Image 1 (cartoon, rainbow, N blue to C red):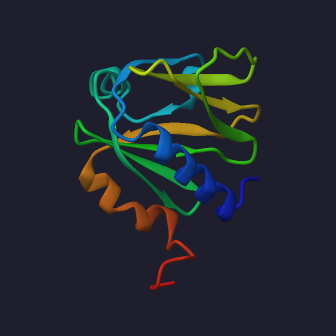
Image 2: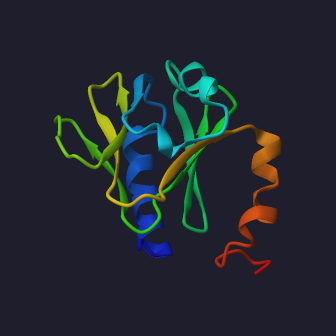
Length: 139
């Protein structure tokens, strides 16, 4: 299972590479990983970009320029792989393609990882569902 330090290292690494990069394509190969309003995914992700990436516990929170947020929970067997080369893996669940020809693959060999789209009001209520982040002062 990715521990908090590993998730935070992933967050920082991705932020350096994909913040403000236009998303030209988003595809999901396993619809079971999607949570939330499924119509919003294509509508709010394509032609948008990530403004920032934060971490809340083991969940990565991607702020979209469209005003929505993507939550990505890797659970125990997930990863986000940034590359400029195509990769093939039977465990690829989704892909984000950027204008600069780079891609981020959501790879998960387990059954519990997910991508969720939420609005700001839902994001503000996250602590109710997920509890306090152990690295926050309130904890």
